[in-house]
Length: 335
Image (cartoon, rainbow, N blue to C red; front, side, top):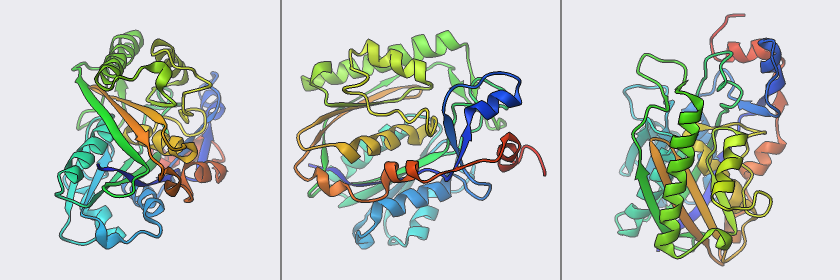
C-alpha cells in the first residue's frame, strides 16, 4: 500500500506581529504573528525549499513524478512543477503537473499521488505545496494570511503513514475567490462563508469519512483541520466532537497564519513530527468543498523524523521591522 515516505517544510524567516497591522489601521489586530515571504521569494522558491527539506539524504533518481500545488504561482501560463523538478535535479522523464485555483488542492493532490503510485505507474511522487496569498491592506483577511510551504514524498515501501480512507465533497459557492484581474483575496459575507460553507461542508466530509472507515471522533489520536481563523477552527473542532487540547494538532494560526493550499499539508507535517506507531490521524481540507482523509501511522513513522521540519522553522525567525516593510515586500509601496 502506498503511503507517506518523507515530509518536509519551509516557513519564511520573517514574521509580522498582527499588532503591527492593527496599529497601522488605528485598530487592534488579533493575537500572534504571521510568516511573510521575503521580497525575493515566491511560491516556487518556497516549494523548492520545502522539497529540499523533504528529500535530504534521499536518492532523487528514484522519484517518478512531481506535483506543484499552489493558488499563487508567479506564472499564469507556465508549469511550475517542471521548474521545481529542474531546480531539484530530478530526472527529465518524470510526470510533472500543477494543481491550482483551490485551497483544498493540497489534500486532493495527496490523494492523486497515492492513487497513482498505488497502481504501480510510479514508484514515488513528490508533492510540493506553497502559497503566498495577499489580502487587501486593512481588510479582515490581512492579519490571517501567512506564507509557507510543505512537501511530501508518496510511494510504496516502508511508509510512515498509510491511507485508511478518503472522501471528497464538492460545494459550489462564492466564499473566497480571486479573478484573473485580482491581486487580493475576496470573501463573501462572513456568517455565510464560515457557517454554511466552511463548517457545514467540512463536517459533512468528515462524517462521511468516519462512516466509510468505521472510525469516530473518540478514536482519532490526532486531527489536522483547516480553519480560516482561530475562532472558526475551534468551532469546527467542537462540532466534530474533538478535544482541542487532546486531539487537535496546532493549526499554526498564531505563529504562521493561513498558508492557503499549503496549510493543511504544513499542519500534517507538524502532526507527524510527534506521531507514534498505530495512531489514527484525521486530515480535513476545505475550499469549494471539503476533503477528509484518515491516515494510520506504521511502525516506520519514526523514520519520517529528523529533518528541520515545521518545528525547526518555527524556532528560527526574525521580526519584520514594521508594517511599511511588509508592504514593500508585496510591492505595494516603494521605499
